[in-house]
Length: 287
Image 1: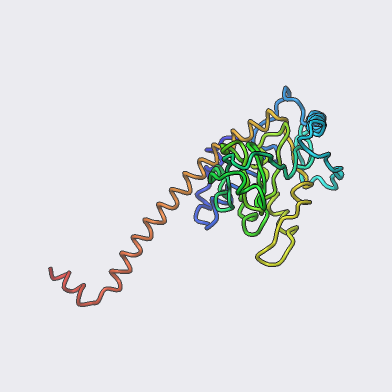
Image 2: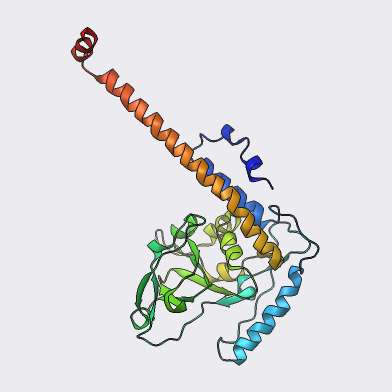
């Protein structure tokens, strides 16, 4: 896919208030449906991944690093067509949900409250450094490479999610309003890309539970929603390919903002001229 061609006719809708946001959603939608990059017959097919993942989970259970996973229900739907070498899965199958950390209380770690998790694509999370003993209780745990999703309204709807990286001490804790998965043999950035996709968010909104202003995405939806898994090599290609059109979206948004600012300044000048007292204008004309 040529990112420049994607934007070739964008001028036709560029004046729409949410034009750039719609374009970003369109790019993400193409990515998770297998339409952003071509498939490669030399890639290991995605159906081979579950065996490797199951073997790794068994090893982690035996080592006492994770609990025995719960049985994963069969998928009841396949919401759209995916390439033949992809596979429908679930986050509960391809990773470890709600992982926990063990570390000395005095060890420095990362604390990530909700405001430090970005909704925008490509914006990394920030963190504060605190002793582990101060943040280990009453917070959501995560470690380097884990993927977190904001589960509360309006943060879920806006797409707040993160791949946790560059954590102090390699571990962190943060807002309780997160679902977290620790991927096994699946690219973290591809998972985050899917969590920001319009299909996942729009399908999740009616599944939220709770009262107005306190609605949350259930663990069931996060853990067991149909998750389209490409071959691992293609996951890397997809993530790399998304960057180009997203960067163009950033440029387009900046140009539209600059144009809007210029238009506003001209409008302010015209209004100032039109609303100036008549005698002021006559005096300026005489001069």
